[in-house]
Length: 287
Image (cartoon, rainbow, N blue to C red; front, side):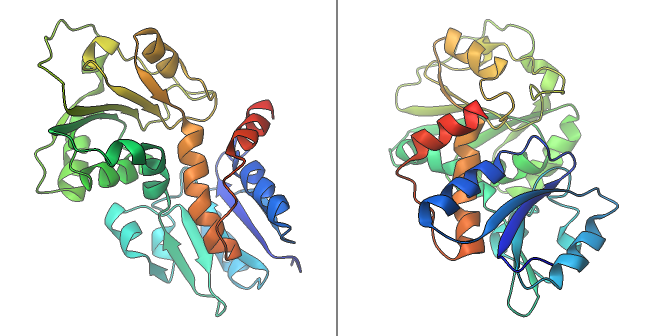
């Protein structure tokens, strides 16, 4: 067991994770003697991993990535209310007594780059969200909490409908087949003055090693903001096509850094320095 305090990120696969670079940068900036690692954990090995770490007093906790965000929940001692509402955990914190508590920092992490937009008053807010996995759960919960009407697209519209009904049962949301967005449309959008429109890829489509995301930007209202949670590659085809169509974009690193901020505070007891995010981005992009 380690004598130096440490946290880590777990997943299957995990080699693509940029979290060690983010947390390592902040630890160095603050002069904290601690480590942040990546650990490959399979679904079958998840319970044994937690059992071994629970006994390690130097282990502060872990970030959780695919495919464990929901599978890990029954193995924990407590679930934070936000994570319970979302139905997914992306951060596990070990208490001094060895108790493990699950949190969800994906929600505030996703919303962080949208804060200037959300601070404005809008006549209407709508988001087209692609994907029905763990990241989508956090995004649906976060956007519904800020008054967005959601159009959730997935390969299985019934699953999308069930997800909307679970996370925001009182909302007037819509579930559609992902294929709907693949073909061009000549739909005449109404006046979007005073409206807020988002198009969010919350799926793995377009990620390195995954199938491409086919989205025709004629489906996006004028003035929409495109947001992709994929971080490898950082500049996805989805974002490239959005810019070519004249839309503003947010890449997946914005959410990754945002959620890491909250997780870092859980692990190491203080918020990370954010004044050098531009340099952090350059380091990650060059890694």
